[in-house]
Image (tube, rainbow, N blue to C red; front, side):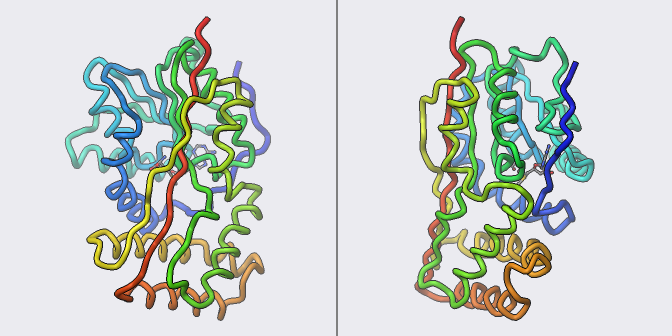
Length: 280
Ligand SMILES: C[S@@+](CC[C@H](N)C(=O)[O-])C[C@H]1O[C@@H](n2cnc3c(N)ncnc32)[C@H](O)[C@@H]1O
């Protein structure tokens, strides 16, 4: 019997088409480089936790090959519908299985527990109030010797230079908006500890660089992703009393202006940690 969780989570970014486009852009930007970090060998059974639009799940399935299997868990029906639409558009509709459910109450069937070679979660632990429950389920889901890979933000690592006026207050408000939902904007620094607490042996701790600068072909895309994230969180920030409307608008305009500077540097990275489940 599955345990039912009384508290689920609130997802700050939403699932409207503009947000789905942002997530798609981010996946385009990141996934080739990110897949190298996963170091899949082919043939793995993979549990993808919080699979979103499943672009990464499909990349994993391509690498795992016909002997492999990828199961994505995603709560939002809108995200699953868009994931299926994108997969179909690219002729990959049978590559991954998507299952609707809450990662805080992992919807696995009895024989699926302890059956995966890899359990992976990216950009999901920052959106749940109890990341340890998720990581515990991931450890339970893999076989003895299996890998658990966590990647998530530590929002304190964001630096724009030269810093746009008002950005520090805006970014503080953005981080506080996670906390207002009961979530942790710094969860990226806790990944090793979460693995350990969940009973896995931590074996790797690293970052995937997600910065850029003016002159880099990806700079405009990355700046656009940042502005979209901020605009989508406007209600949570302004409505939540974390910054006033003028401060919000002025700072977002300053970020847009900074994006046109010839000397803009964007420093950010995604924390990634890996653990192993003990062999019996
Ligand atoms: C930022 S997206 C990341 C998607 C994907 N992991 C990636 O890296 O592209 C987070 C996803 O988690 C989903 N989500 C949020 N809370 C969830 C929960 N409690 N259970 C399952 N999915 C959840 C959201 O709907 C969203 O699609």
